[in-house]
Length: 427
Image (cartoon, rainbow, N blue to C red; front, side, top):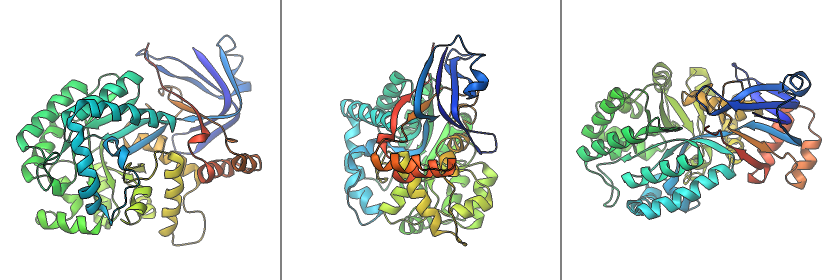
């Protein structure tokens, strides 16, 4: 057992922030031997009960749940900031040529190491991640995540048409490879498999149908793809699948919408699409920095709240411009202001933080497992320094409330705030 004394941030079952200025976090082995939270709360209340537990005192620091990234591309690490006119030219000129290199296991392993280093440096302890169409890319990332004890979900990308040589796969073999990788990795340690059509236009009817059949046979696996990101992409998808009511409905028509299905972007939705998300339990991964970078549009946070469908935050590296959750939360605040119908704060800072931690866990169907510091949760957390830079220190010292403190971190923070990332360990 181990305890940590610092300010402590966590969330209740309603998504409300709970903050102890002088808090105590106690961790120890859970039922499966992995380190979990045993107690969390006010230090004065808990200290007598845990007086014999070794304690690390971190004055002036905040312990918070590890961040969760619900959509990120590890093979695109090296193309962050590559200039392009929009989504489809960016895929053609940067994404596909770089992803073709991941047929080489050594290259995939080298990028996987850097990628996992960067996740942990930024305080991200769980990620739903795209690999490439090459099985070697999946093996490399799972192997690296397993070595570190990260909770990570990924899968082989499916793209059997409208893709260049080097990344295009073959329909039947792509499904065989997906099932082989699923059986090899899903449920091993903290790893999960995601059935991963790149996006509807890059898969044939047969490949999407096969992916849906695989999802039906493995209900515990995840599903991930992209939808309604760009107007040209939407028109292309509708032309390729004229019998589907909408771009989103293409996935429903092929058995690819349910709990543990996560679709990135979800920008250009109508109310019937929002209702379909809610009815199927499908989640949206909101990617504000990539949407701004590629000029794709603005996610409608107010519409998502009105329709009550699951949504959470994501970096979408490399279309996204930073691994940092602080950058993502800051961009989400700006984006949400675009859809406001009345003056005021677009998204409260507590809500932004929840959307990148406990709310993201809910979107991934991992609520109570990660993303929080309530008893029973795996002990993934970050130690934050609210005085990491002179300007941040000046602002946080003057914060008169939790909202002001968190908002200062969101607006002024970056990787320098993350002093330490702690990962739940197996016995």
